Amino acid sequence: MQLTEDPLGTLLRAANAGDGRSYARFLHAVTPIVRGIVRARGRSLPPDQHEDIVQDVLLGLHLKRHTWDSAQPVRPWIYAITRHKVIDAFRKRGAGIQLPIEDFSEILAADPEADPLAARDDRREVDRLIAQLDPRSAEVIRALTLRDESQVAVGERLNLSPVNLRVTLHRAMKRLATLGRKDVP
Amino acid sequence: MTTTDDLITRLAAEPPAQTMRSNRMVLIIVASIVAPVVVFLFTLGTRPNLALAWTNPMVPFKTALPLATCLLAMSVLLRLARPEARVGQAALGFIALAVVALTLWTATFAMRPPETRFAEVGAFSLSECLGLIVALAIIPTIATLRVLRQGASTSPTLSGALAGLTAASGVAVGYSMFCTRDNPLFFVTWYGVAILFVTLVSAVVGRRVLNW
Image 1 (cartoon, each protein chain N blue to C red):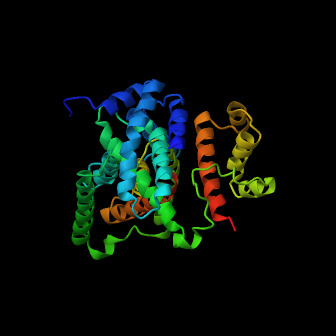
Image 2 (image 1 turned 90 degrees about the vertical axis):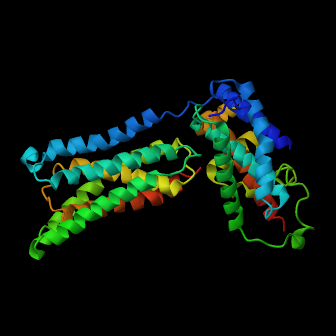
Image 3 (image 1 turned 45 degrees about the horizontal axis):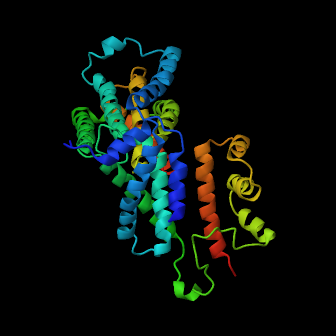
């Protein structure tokens, strides 16, 4: 056992007890650690995807935060989740066909962080992109980003908890970004 | 960078999660094993003269081996529900159980006259043994996999396999009180086949449903 309490452990313990501010501090403190691991392991991936993976890991930590046994040190738990999500992310991306990026440098969107819907003014184009998602994600996107409905109303209508709704939105946006990039002619 | 900060702000606004309690998981898993077994034994009854049968030194193995397997598998399963856990020393336990089962099998094979070795094997006895163990294991396997989804296993296939192993060996304990075939060549082989079948199916399912 440790002699001094790990500050990350203190923060996560407070977070799991309901302290949202400690939780934000925990996530902010963990982010550079995760970023470091992703960068160290992710040399084979373009750096613009690293931040996506970092966010996947943060989501993983969030969705599984109840699995930390507060009697145990927190870092092995963080590293285990990070490793799992990073490997998972690489497997998913590795499964795609790898093409030399130079061939596409002129047609690829310059800023991968940009709102995937922003570049597409044409409403029909947007609809076509959204239609490629599964129906629930598509509805979440349409309701929240195109029709500006409130999260509460959408959550109730689709029978999604607030966490689930936000995670669905986040993932759907990311998938849209990929689709948008992929399908520029 | 800002999107990551946004994400953190959104995540921090979520209500806190209830911590995972292993006791509750054990309770659900055990109940899902015991319930179908109790219904089964109450409907069809235990074998006649159960107590008398246990005076045969081979018979307790029929219950004890699956029971030990079930307990070991459940303890490993619960540990692996936390992401940082490793199987570690527990692997030795499984090896020890396999050695006991194989020793029992070979010793019986050597001691029995050839014509009695596989006398119990028949279409009816096999379908009864395999069919009942597999059928009884369905509910506990599903329940155990469901409970495990709350956890965060970093080896979903292994956790899935352990879920099937726990469920099938658990119901085999109950089934052994009904089954009248006391030849270790029969029960080690066919209980084993039924348990391994459930374990394999559960591993395949676990690979999909326990990933996160």
